[in-house]
Every structure is written in C-alpha cells, then in structure tokens.
Length: 170
Image 1 (cartoon, helix red, strand yellow):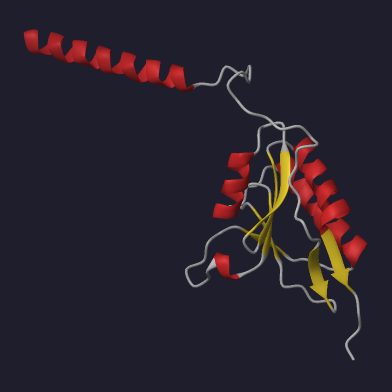
Image 2 (cartoon, helix red, strand yellow):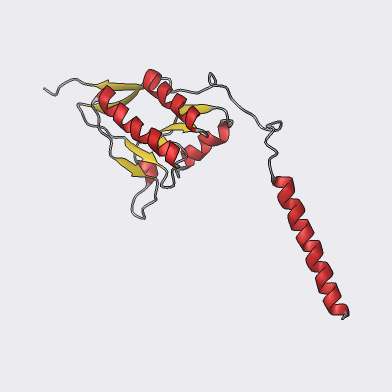
C-alpha cells in the first residue's frame, strides 16, 4: 500500500513539473519579449542578382517540401512572375536532401522556410512582423513568417534584387 501511494505521489509531482514546463514555454502572444522588424527593415543584396546569362540560369529555386498552401500559392505566382518579367523559367525543387547531392554546392534561391542552414539563419534574424531578402553564401533567401510579408519580400526581390544578362552569344 505504501509503495503504491509513493508511486502515485511521484507520478503527480512529475506530471505537475511537466505541465508547468509546458505552460512556461508558451508564448502569450503579446509580443512583449519578441523583437520585430518593420516593413522597411529588410536586408537586400548590395548588387543585383544575375539570375541568368544568355537565357541560362545556375540558380535552383527551392521551397520547403512542407510548404503551407498560402505560401505555395505565392510561390507559384513567384515562378510565373519571374518567367513573365525575365523570360526565365525555373523548375521548382523541394528542399529534400539527397544522399549524393551537397546543397551547399549549388547557387539557390530559397523561398520561405526551406530546409537549409542559410534559410534558418535568416529566419533567426527577422521578427514575426518582418521579412528579408538576403545573400547568404551562394544562396539568396526570401524569408517571412506570414503570407503578407512574404509577398512584400517577393516585391522587394523584383524591385531591387534581380538582373538578367540578355546579351546574345557571338
């Protein structure tokens, strides 16, 4: 009897500790302890990104394999807008790691929360209300937490960050 009471008491104490830990880690949503950026506080590359030279591109366009529907709609429009504005058609890739391929070896445009270290680094720098378009190594990261902000990041990308070398080969 004493053993069962002792086990029950330990279980209650452990359950209480786990509950308190979960409650303490929850965000209240007031944003008091979070840092946020405004629309104007985005970081863009210093030089325009040359997406293509002589109609060929070295960049791969990468999205998360688990992309949310709202972000995916914006991503599909992004591909269409790149094609209409520049003449370049990107075949989209997901961020799934393949055994024989080193993702660091390829220049990539990372759309949203892609499974890449560069994407995670940019997301760690922006607040929930911010967005960024940033070079990280040989990657260009287009990052935001909300669909509204990713649309602003895409707009910034088109206005300030892209260039296409349309000269013909001789």
